[in-house]
Length: 158
Image 1: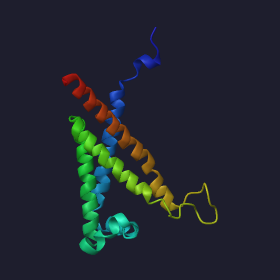
Image 2: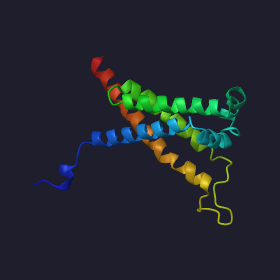
Image 3: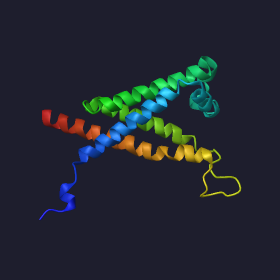
Image 4: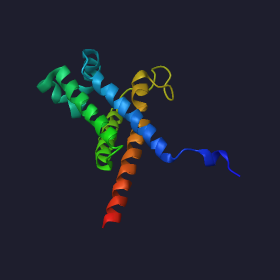
């Protein structure tokens, strides 16, 4: 007798859904960095952040945003290539992990809770950033999956 559980698709379908949703996110957010409205929005945060602040005097608001957007597009492309190459997938997913660790680090010292309400009522900055926790988990999952596949392949060829 079979059950609903017996009819579930393979876990690889879940990895594919995760991969392509992350590719879409990196593509859309990366492309947006080339628009002036997004460059200005990023600058409001980035100019105060030590990791990015040094780039603004060198490249300007749009130039800095273009660099960030290019990195995001490269990350998405490598995650996409991970469908065929575990090595590319590991690099891309690791870049994604770094991306979301950086964005989540913006929360340290930032006003996260809605004034007048406090915890657990998030302000708009917290709402903007906290979603990155699940994106970090998604990139971590793809990195671990690619790493294990590479380890398995190396073990079978040794």
